[in-house]
Image 1 (spheres, rainbow, N blue to C red):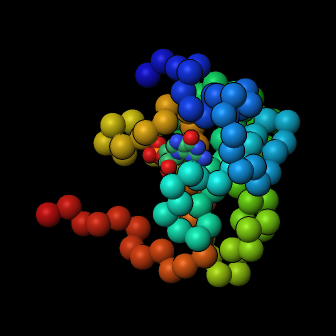
Image 2 (cartoon, rainbow, N blue to C red; image 1 turned 90 degrees about the vertical axis):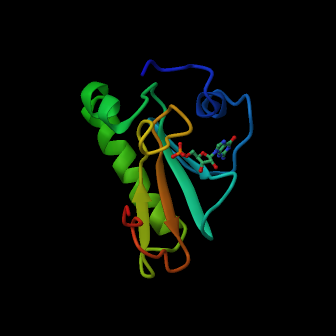
Length: 121
Ligand code: 5GP
């Protein structure tokens, strides 16, 4: 999938639409999801133009990759879910129902999160 520079997260990165920012570094940005599925629901994204984790892992620099994962840990600490627990998730492509074509890692927490996936019938 080609990167679409007009996706909603690219617009957030350019400051064209607002977001409730949680954490920002040279290479990464974290902000609250607009339709939270848990008391803590934050999205952590690289600032670079990457569609998915596969695209990011193939093309990003070691510094960008380290920075993104450090940002996830920092978000968990800042939002106070380290003790209670949290879940991270990154959807990619149609089967995962990725909605926004810019890599994002969801950080969920603040309540028991239930089973990881429903079993297919
Ligand atoms: P996906 O399904 O691609 O893994 O998740 C996309 C997420 O982006 C959804 O949880 C959705 O609520 C969130 N989202 C979509 N548009 C916006 C927006 O304009 N601002 C913010 N903060 N989150 C958004």
